[in-house]
Length: 421
Ligand SMILES: [Zn+2]
Image (cartoon, rainbow, N blue to C red):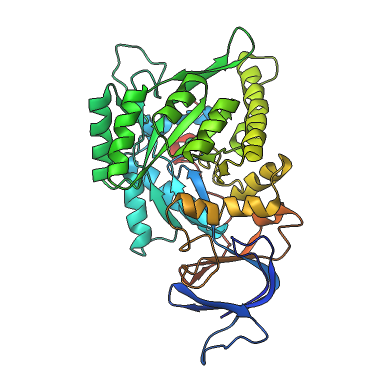
């Protein structure tokens, strides 16, 4: 039994005070007034009467197989070219533990970046009880087209490994989706744009990748399996194709026009903006890349605000892994609030609304009878300052309590720590 001073249940508009939450096994049995609650005999009591209790948080855009690769240490490419898969898997176990300790009890992990079906393995290890970690929804390899994904920039004579599965044509597209679904993908991830740059009129241009026909084949296949499709799309042609092809969620959506937003409303498309990642690691001001990085962030803010005003279903996502796992995951909350979302709505985007996107409504993202016992607590009021969610004090997943005690992710692999020759 948990005694909660305040309860933000993940669904309601206002918190409740002095609440008793009875947990039996891995489920919540009842939620009632502490004063009149019937406490089962022999129940152990967790006293959170001076804290605010919430459902376990959900990050719907992560990469547990990335570690915010430092270009000075070989960047993204070194992961694929130099690190054994076992090392990458070991570091992913640290990433999932860090997420859990910060109160994120569910992740939708959006591709392994060259680590194949490693996410399915990590998910099995968590579900088997071998390692601590959040509930995972995984996409495995992700899909893009020839010329549409790293590793890029090598001699054309070299046949380089790729961070995603590359397809050309609807037949290959459908085959890739079938392979990934067959090997355990819960969602399919598609890259609908790749490179981006500033065009001759100062606009952000994004290179489109799959055609509508290619994407439609994937969406048709995934929907047949009862699964959904997440589309990375910045804007322009690629974003329009993503919507015309029937994507279920738009990832990033840096540069969304009014027509795009209207189509998202009409189709019920989810929007996972991942704001924080676009505020990190800007190239220097005055450089071509620096100009692009600033343009991306400013357009992104406008797109987010337009989507919020129009009533698009906005879901919390961070792109963790793009940033090191040593960074606080909850840093996304204050950015959402700064752009006009209420703290309660921002919390819902990481609880009940994310649960709805993941087809787990009532199961996760809510403190209510019948839901999994994923429960967290913070000592201050997140509605006063949403930043306090960076300091989760209590974490329970499926009825088991975890401590937030490990600081920092795994150190970089030994070879990158050596002094430069
Ligand atoms: Zn991502």
